[in-house]
Length: 213
Ligand SMILES: N[C@@H](CCC(=O)N[C@@H](CS)C(=O)NCC(=O)O)C(=O)O
Image 1 (cartoon, rainbow, N blue to C red):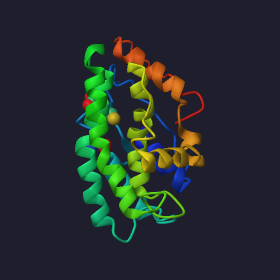
Image 2 (cartoon, rainbow, N blue to C red):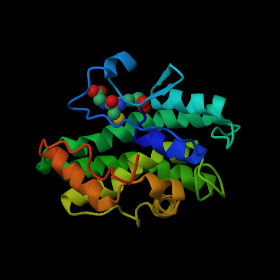
Image 3 (tube, rainbow, N blue to C red):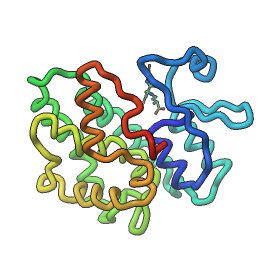
């Protein structure tokens, strides 16, 4: 039982998993047996339960060390990820729930929160957060939020601002072209439709799932 974020990691590690998608507004009773918090993701392997996306990545790194997910400077990267996790997801989540009239303000706020990502990419001077050639764990963990950030501004008739975020914009294009992304991703129009339906209280958790995990 995995979620959106971990699907990309699992595809990168090239593991075979049986994915059980959960309707989070109509959860099966057995979910709390797997995770008392009633949350996804949970990975179950030979009776062992691993809960939470970071714990799952650590588990995969330990049991499937090839390809290596964690860079040498993982502690430093982890701090950065924790920092981003405090500001980016909460800004994006609001687009699912907040009324139309506050959307422009929300987008302004979300863009402000993305500025550290642009600065970090400029500082690193590499196409990926993980370096020159391939995405690292930071790229993988940030992507789901940045993917939603491509769609969220469309709710207010705007677009992701590539002029304001040139490095992040190039990174988005590069990430879109990664096989593990397009193999596990729902296309932007479907994602937008999902966001719109969620905003109306119509929770379409199965939307776009036929070809993806
Ligand atoms: N920090 C946790 C967050 C887990 C989480 O918030 N999961 C959400 C879905 S992305 C969930 O299960 N929400 C349903 C609920 O809380 O009832 C992680 O990264 O695994």
